Image (tube, rainbow, N blue to C red):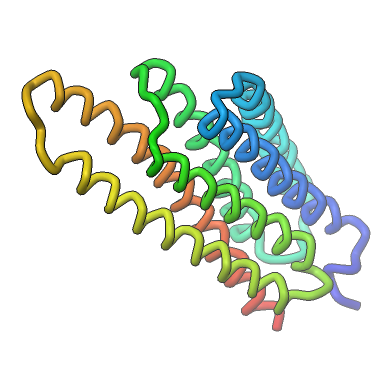
Length: 206
């Protein structure tokens, strides 16, 4: 019998799925905040970030209590960590925008939408990882493609940002905007890392 069919192990699959869904929900809130200025989106993201932390605590507690797991313990731990990091960086994006008084521009809007698409792909991957692992792998690859798109936009945005500083005040404003860019770029990086772990899990399963 496959370990993935063992009733106890389904706890980990369920928790990881819930984490991925919480990431999706949080990033949806980020998109609403950045593209529409919707404060309810920021509040939703904050709630999801806290929920994600709690799910990760629950997963680690289960790891301490359980000997047999559906796939390697290290992979479960890392996947949970990277999913949590996506939410942390998404939340940091909002906090930095508010604290540094950064208004969203076309580049930031484009990046958060790509991160949203990456989060959607991670949910689809986790929904299929036990029954259709090769389909899960395809969604992981699509997640990685979204990260590549974010990085292209990020480089373009930073290039434009530093194309012609006029004075010291302009430089300070540029540095503030770059900090926000970096947070959303880091969110995409962590989604990419989560996709890497999913790929590793599928490789071991097949």
